[in-house]
Image (cartoon, rainbow, N blue to C red; front, side, top):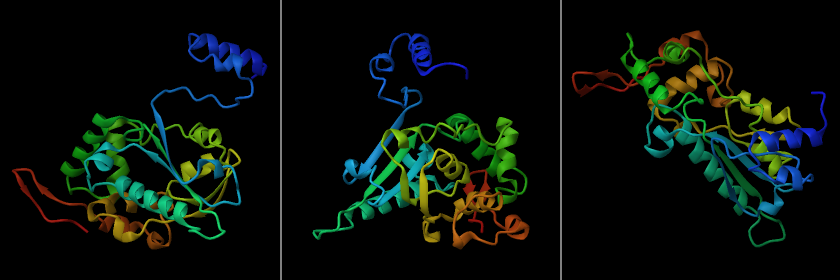
Length: 254
């Protein structure tokens, strides 16, 4: 960008009204993480092992979903993926036991990117559209509903998403729990190695969430061997729970 690191640090310091003196006083800190939007890191095991590539690290980078994470909605895979990640992180931290082998570490980074960064209200409008549209909720129309309501499918910017991983010293992830290639590519493109992509057990995906996972896999997401081979026929066949909007809930879909 035609500038020096010192000039860049001073510019950011001025533009943030001097809130981060470390920009000037700590030139050894090479990653700037302003508290914008909110990021929380949950760690199982010894954090000091995170930079050690020889010690197993299981990781998920998770985008907030209050509907599922907090209230248990079964329309999406967010809570199942988060639950699966926490379980795998705990298992990794517990491996090694009392013997000479050292246990690994589990890491979940929780980002405040509700509804693909479209916001909670927009997300619920999309859900409402999906359920009320002609023909009901279907994998074939999954992404179209988001565009119909918001004008775009996704507003997340993943290029800076790996920064907290670098801040913690991550250089190698042994087990990565995510079906998103956007997240995978963003992490790998910053130099972090990913060894294994851990798929979610199919029995953890609720019936109504089959719409989401089917649509995403068809459009390029990687959910593992259990979801390989999804074609246009499958896309058209998978439907969500139907509702009678006079007040009676209908039968579950495929």
